[in-house]
Image 1 (spheres, protein in one colour):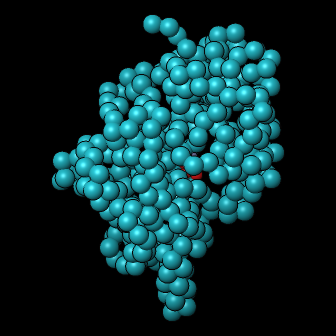
Image 2 (spheres, rainbow, N blue to C red):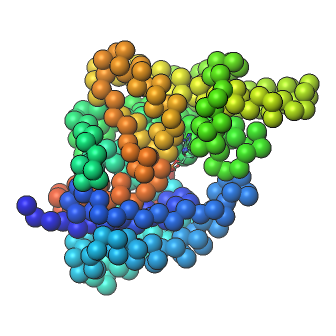
Length: 342
Ligand code: KG4
Ligand code: ZN
C-alpha cells in the first residue's frame, strides 16, 4: 500500500498545532496552547494571532522531529480554512501556502467542524488502543467552544447538518458559567473537575427552548447569573460553600439537554451509531451519562480519545488524507473563512 504523508496545521482559535499522518495513522500531534488568555477570561483575537506567529515554526519542526521524517517525505499540506478567528486562521494558511510553494506540493483546505467529526476515523490501533472506528452512517454531536451541532455523517465527504445552536455554544455555556463563579478561562474542564463531588440535581435550571434539533444556551447563562446573584446576596459565601453542587447542577443541565436532543435525532433519523466530538466531548460526565443512555437504547456510542477532543492538528490531517485520496486540492488564492458551513 502506498504511504501518503500529510503535514497538518490547525490555528483556528488559541491552539497552534501541527501533526504528521501517514495514511490514517498519526505519527505526531504537537500542540502549543496559549496561556495568555487566562487572565482575560476569554480568547483575545489579536493576542492569539501574535502567539500563533511565534509558535508555528517551532511546532511544525517539533511535529516533523517526533514523526522522524524530513520535509521531502511530505506529500501535501492540510490546513484549517475555517470556521475560526480570522487573524489566527491567517497565520496557519499563510504558513501552509509558503511551505507548499517552497516544497512544490499540493495544499488541502479543511473545515474545522468536519475535522472534529472525522477525528473518529483516525486509525486507533496505531496508537495502541483497540477501539473501533464508527461505520457510516453515524450521528455526531459536536460540542466545542464555538459550535454546537448535530451532524448526520454518511461518508467522509457527505455531511448533513441536522441541528445547531441559535446563539452560544455548549462550551461557551460551560466557560461563561465558570466565569460567573470566578473561575479562570477556559472554565469547562474546571467545572468538570469540581462537579465530581457534587449532586447534579441539587439545583434546577430551566431547559432552553429551541425548535427540533436546534439548541439555545444564552437564556441558560442569564438564569444561571440570576441564580448566583440572588443566592450570593443572601449568603456571600454561597459559591464557596456550594461549589461542587453548583458545578454539578449546571453541568447536568447542559449534558442532559444536549444528550436529549441527540438521542431524539437518532430516533427520528433511525441511526444506531452515535458519536461525540469537540472540546466538550472531553467532559467526563457527558461521556458517562451518554454511555448509559446509549446502552439503555441499544445504540453504539463512539467517544474520541481525549487528545482528539479539543483542537488538534491530527484531526485536520485525517481530513487531509481523505481529500488527498480524492485529489481534492486548493489553489494559492484560498482565503480563510471565519464562518464555514459544514
Ligand atoms: O473544540 P475546542 O478545543 O475549541 C473550539 O473549536 O472551540 O473546544 C474548547 C471548549 C472550551 O469551551 C472548553 O471549556 C471546553 O471545550 N472543554 C470542556 C472540557 N474540556 C474542554 N468543557 C467541559 N468539560 C471538559 N472536560
Ligand atoms: Zn474546535
